[in-house]
Amino acid sequence: MERLAVSPADPEPWALAFAADVLLRGGLVVFPTDTLYGLACDPRNADAVERVYRTKGRLAGQAFPRALPLVAASLQQVEAVAVRLSPLTRRLAERFWPGPLTLVVDVGPGIVEAVHAGLGTVAVRVPNHAVARGLAAHAGFPVVSTSANRSQQPATSTVETAIDALGDVIDLALDGGPTVGGAPSTIVDARTDVPRLLREGAVPFSRVLESL
Ligand code: AMP
Ligand code: MG
Image (cartoon, rainbow, N blue to C red; front, top):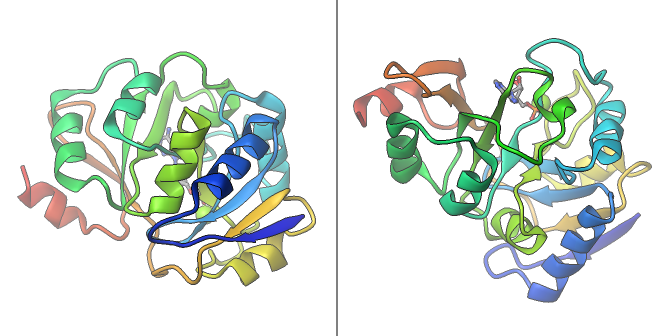
């Protein structure tokens, strides 16, 4: 495993390019987000996705809620992985991105089935963190972003705890210093006219409702 320090506000492009290359070769990368540290892989690579499930102690194909969320560089990049965005999803994305609101979209081409565990949907957001966005930008595609911990263990806001938990299986850890920590992203399904809360998190659901 390699550990690489990056500037959290203005990450070095060569470091992001290096990390993206690790992902595109099927590797696993720990990286900072605007909430916690995440574990990334290429959602188009079935072997890499399988490694993430094995690492986290989840079984691929296990029923809901065992699906893996993604982070993207931009709304445009989300459009590349979604069949289409509902008007409400688009409104919430424009209102809360970049930020810790994850939205459920109907999955488009390219993403392996294990990522969505047969749900036909994928949970995705544009994070308010330059390293997380930069990783997806350099990969040219959204990346899996599951919490960097083993199943049932607490999520981590420092690279050290992430390495303690996952160091033996990851290929690279991007050290962007401690993250905000606290709650993970809020997950909302806004594919219909009535938004549905799937997980309360950093954005209170009341704020989501108030924004409509
Ligand atoms: P974690 O993998 O620990 O970071 O948590 C990710 C959360 O996202 C889990 O609670 C999953 O159930 C949820 N999630 C991932 N994909 C989907 C999806 N397609 N639909 C609903 N929830 C999802
Ligand atoms: Mg988790």
